[in-house]
Image 1 (cartoon, rainbow over the protein chains, first blue to last red):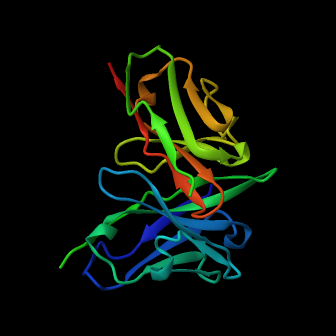
Image 2 (image 1 turned 180 degrees about the vertical axis):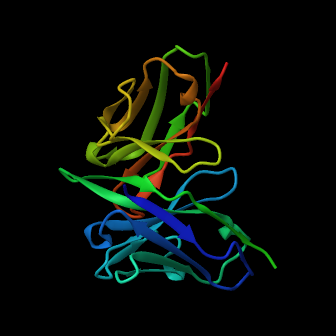
Length: 121
Length: 109
């Protein structure tokens, strides 16, 4: 079955770059769009962006100046880089598959377990 | 930017009761792009409904979605013990792309 697994440092210093990877198994990474979504402790969900294997991507405008996403098809993983982090970026970061149901319908149907990232010196 | 509002913030019900959750958008949303998720403590969200009314794979038929335009509803016909959780609606449209509502917590009365 399709599985997603996030990995990366759990602690990042303020002003540095947060880097996470999501490893995809059970399906070709070329077949879908892939997203990052985050959730600050005790709060709701915020979409960060999505990426396709050819490099096309779209980001939340509120984060666009600091976000880069990419796909490595040889390793079947996709990545998130968020620069100049502050305490406000402390959150659980989820990777998710964006599934196209047709008829212009889509949703995040498969999620990783999430990884907690704390921004602190 | 489309803002989603969910009500009530908390719904206190007993097992076996019917739950009706509301999601209201600040402007019209395409039904095709309205989804509902369930999240339990310490877990990732789980997709329940896409396209406003289609159940995702493996979702029991006690979950149903309806609505159009700016008003959408998630109904749980008879609450099971495992249904007590937080529920989020989500839409996809113009900038900023995907947005989520603040969530409704369904807890045990």
